[in-house]
Amino acid sequence: QKEVEQNSGPLSVPEGAIASLNCTYSDRVSQSFFWYRQYSGKSPELIMSIYSNGDKEDGRFTAQLNKASQYVSLLIRDSQPSDSATYLCAVNAPGANSKLTFGKGITLSVRP
Amino acid sequence: NAGVTQTPKFQVLKTGQSMTLQCAQDMNHNSMYWYRQDPGMGLRLIYYSASEGTTDKGEVPNGYNVSRLNKREFSLRLESAAPSQTSVYFCASSGLLAGSYNEQFFGPGTRLTVL
Image (cartoon, rainbow over all chains, first blue to last red; front, side, top):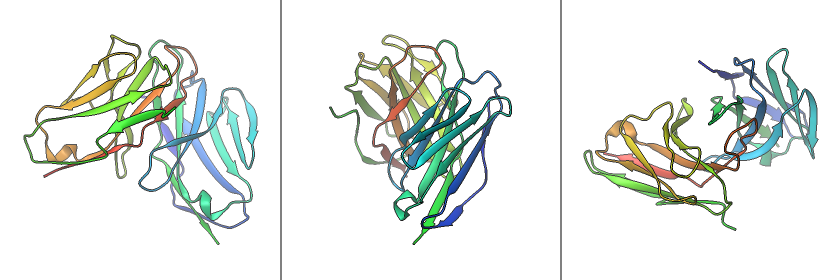
């Protein structure tokens, strides 16, 4: 059973702080990793993809992957109230007809 | 370029009624998916279609059927709706038939209530 675990929330940070969202996965052969943002009442929106160990930066967002520890994280720098949303971690294993396994998500609240 | 579209946006059914949720994508993607999202349960895969002409069960297929009508369209049918099927339904698509990468893009969702 492939599992994706996200640290329990909700997470609350002040405006301007760094928000750190964490995710662990059980399937060691997983190869691609995604972070989705979901605003209340809306659909998930892909914000970051990462495929190799290390950091990947895109604006205020940094995804970090450590395959040895089976750990992927999302850092949000200079957090804004507009970052308040639920963040979903998703993991894909290789192979034909592979599917994404999603974590249950963590809700982030950025206090003005 | 509308991405992934879903109809209807909202629906209320009575127990035992049937309905079909429609999904279409204009990104020339091979793979399409149907998920349901319930509070505390996260996104759960109902059915998926890796390519035109193929469909496979996901994690929670009971009570549902699907049709991959063509490369663009993937519909989800509830033959006899039950209150347990009250949920938000999302359709998604991705560009790769197989392999390591599977960036999925989601439609706006259908909020279904079964009374």
